[in-house]
Image 1 (cartoon, rainbow, N blue to C red):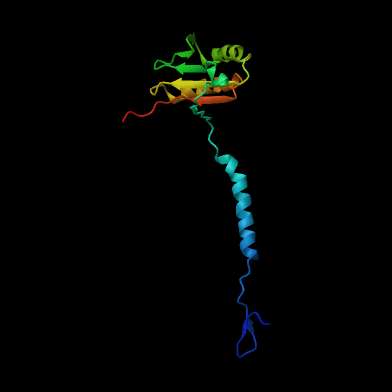
Image 2: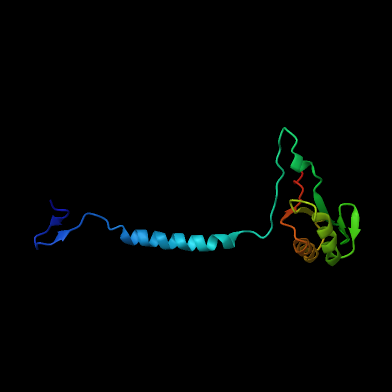
Length: 140
């Protein structure tokens, strides 16, 4: 049984497609995507609240909130902290008894970006695993 047709010169043409080059290209693309995908992740972790009917004991703990006010003042809960460097030991002291090291950061929209990044770096240096950014939904 012949695969192709013969022309007048005795040559035959193949009617089947060779998929080997196609598979090779797909494997190369797969490797490229596997290597580059971890680089596409964003640097800020966002934890969205979950709504449940029953109260959750883990959620019953009061979350730690670091606030950066419009004038640049930093506070952890209700206590003021002078600089981001002084925030590190305070956070370490508060987090040492907690199982999950999770902090939420609230910053006024008019605070300079550099100040917010300094506070974020201080929070990370204190050993925080999860850093959530608090935002407000736009008013319609």
